[in-house]
Length: 413
Image (cartoon, rainbow, N blue to C red; front, side, top):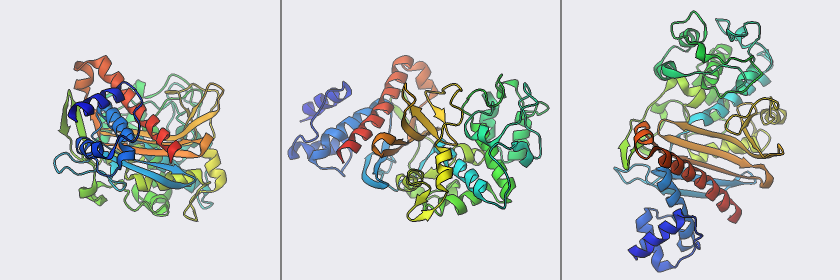
């Protein structure tokens, strides 16, 4: 039996098709091997493929779902969310969502945009809401607008040691000013692109951190408080928070660093400063509510969170004539992947932060969506010293394979 298992795993990695059903007798032994107990013999082939992809991408666990017609129609949980306790993930296991947090920040900005008591337009100068005037020093006469930041067209870059320092900063106003204004102690010319705002695209975490600070100034509330009251709570995302102390530690996936075959347990960390760009802890179940709201014209469970016209604007490519970034174009806090004819193939967002990897994609052609989280990452040491080219390519192949397998599963259910 063990020889059969090795052969099957090898075939999976090589891309050879394996029938989903391989017999009830084999199912029990394979279940023990892959450490999953929530599948039947009909799921074995798919599970082997998922676990092979996880192995290539060094994923300790995956929690995933498929959404059709605004309903979760399938969930899958694989591996271990904690190796020490042998805890397995489930649909309510918490993971860090990384840059999917930007979708929440964009929803908060657009909620304020709809608020008639707060008067601003998407094409207004964001400096009107800041205690300092923010301009690209290379183009001091060009205003930076909400639309530009939401669609990564602001020319705000962000590189080097200061981007690491802001992970641990507690003063948004002071640090942003010191980082982006030429007289600041943390300033560096590389934080600004050598192009006029609105003329080119560059993915910017700092831009969304700036939006989070603007939300605080508009509302006289903390970013976390406003977002919970106006986005997370109405969406019934009760197991989600930007505050790690409010997350059930027993149900939080442990982050791991992969170092040449060894998984090193990493600390569970709360990076308050980057919350608007990447600090959300959430679950597959909770995040499905946010995605369903986006796919249902701003409504979740009968409650209108955003206007349909607002959702349409968020999903619209804002600057169609600027460059692609990682093959993507940008809506408002929303990523759009198009084919060579500019037809939208996928839309949604992804996230990667420290040891977490998350994807939330909707396939428009057949009204099908997937969400998945995982809780480990390759260390820089591994990428540099442990078969660097091969390791990186296999990791990326494994991640893409998980995406493809989940969409294949969506076709079956």
